[in-house]
Image (tube, rainbow, N blue to C red; front, side, top):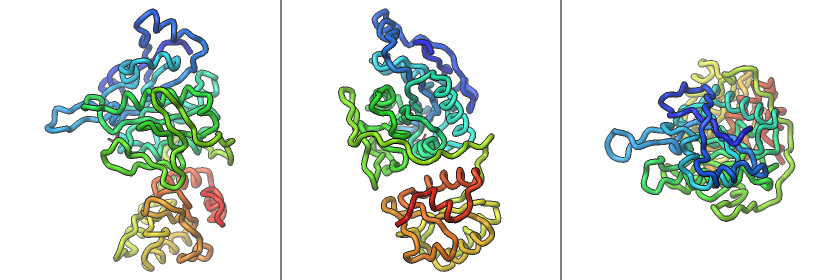
Length: 368
Ligand code: DGL
């Protein structure tokens, strides 16, 4: 890797989904060049996917903006002092709002990260990403990337052209984390608003606030600002086998069914008819649902559809065999994984041939 950064140019000129690399010079001044040529600096690869962090004010009225208009290389170049943190290269994987995140981009990201690690190109990875589905991408990568190196997702709640844009500070802080030896061995991380979260626990909790990411059951793993980086616990050694990334997308279809008062069986029966290989119940309370829905899920499980009960509540662990007879009906529970992350794991499990309810439960975590 050189001290050059690769970039794609403006998003509008890129082909979405292709990792497009064009060399740019991030190092304008001789002093900066000296800094960046410092071989002691960590090598960090920035992979751009789009999102509000790359958003620009739109010609539409009011405070409207369009996601994914600014390349990650341009974002980096706009943040002072980044060249003193790391030797940075940047590539564009996609240019989308993360509401459009999809299996193809996930596979492209995972393959590029693996290649960079296998060829010893990098000491850390930063992924710029929309906040809407950031937790799903983080958790997907956590399950398929086997590395001790820091892999850090970062985004912003305000577009780059907004008053008080939070993207530059978030990007600086993500770079600080990705280039830090003490960030190793902590799995995939999410950095926003001076806070570092772990992929298993983090979730978006507020539609607009810059303090949107929280880890309700575990708390953050650390804090970062321009002057300091603190982890609250020592790094834990990576545990558990990683799941194999299938040859090619798409992942098997897994639907999330949202439970509510007065619920009937129709959404579950429809999912089975549409060919869902797995169903995650976003259940009420402790992952529960109406008798009609539970009966329909039991019928689906009998037909070979893998059923996992999660909760729509937003925090807490779903317990087995309390109100719902999981052993008898052949269900697994997601424990602390929210429905959207339970879905990611179930897609990967089914793709890896893990469909037996006991093995599926084991993959979500041991239950007392
Ligand atoms: N379009 C949404 C996304 O890319 C906006 C949210 C954001 O990026 O903060 O996820």
